[in-house]
Amino acid sequence: MTDITKYRNVSLTHETYKEGHFLSTVLFDGLQVSMSQLIESLISKKIEELNLKDKVAQYEERKKIVHKKEENNVWIN
Image 1 (tube, rainbow, N blue to C red):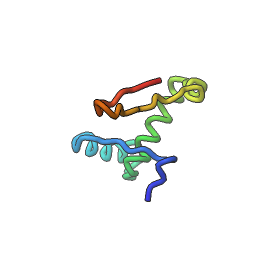
Image 2 (cartoon, rainbow, N blue to C red; image 1 turned 30 degrees about the vertical axis):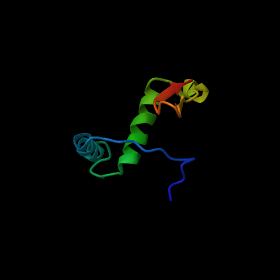
Image 3 (spheres, rainbow, N blue to C red; image 1 turned 30 degrees about the horizontal axis):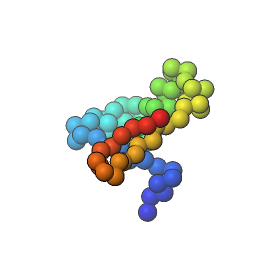
Image 4 (cartoon, rainbow, N blue to C red; image 1 turned 120 degrees about the vertical axis):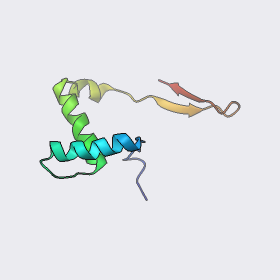
């Protein structure tokens, strides 16, 4: 079972998934890496490119809560 304290899930359209696998072969010289590895690589490169390492370290992720009465998802900081 996946360790939910270490990993998250993302949903992609079939087209984006296909494009991602094609992009991985271009970026990694013909190798087809996993979608997770591709996403991690792209995010890391963009964080470095934009010089955001310090800001990422200070960033606090918003928490998602569900109101029991309304069952509406609400984002809080």
